[in-house]
Image (cartoon, rainbow, N blue to C red):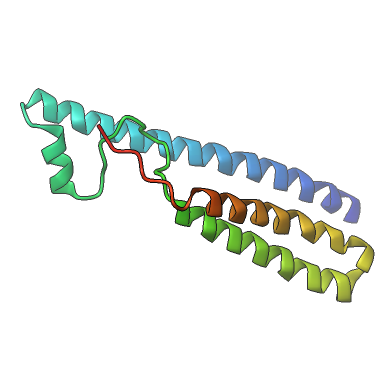
Length: 131
C-alpha cells in the first residue's frame, strides 16, 4: 500500500500542477473573449468602447490584451515574498532536518534577489503612454 501511495503523490502533483496552469490559461482566455464580445456589441450599437469602459470602471482598453501592466511594485512584492520563503525554508531545513539539504532554500532566495535587483533597475522608468 505504501508503494502505491508513494507513486501516486508525484503523479497527482504533476497532473494538478499542469491542470492548474491550463485552467488559469482558460480563465484568462475566457475573460478576453468576454471583453472582446462586449466591445464588439458596443461598436455594433454605435457606442464608443472607451466610454463603455469608463462606465464599467474596471476594464482597460489597450493594445496588449491579456498582458500585465507595467508595475515595478509587483517585482518588489515578488522579491520580498521569495526572499522570505528562502529564509523561511533555510532555518528549519538547517536546524531541524539536515544542514546538507538547506542549500535548496537558496533557490527561492536568489530568484527573489534577482527580482529585487530588477526592481531597483526599473523603478524610476516612466510608464509608456497609451496611444
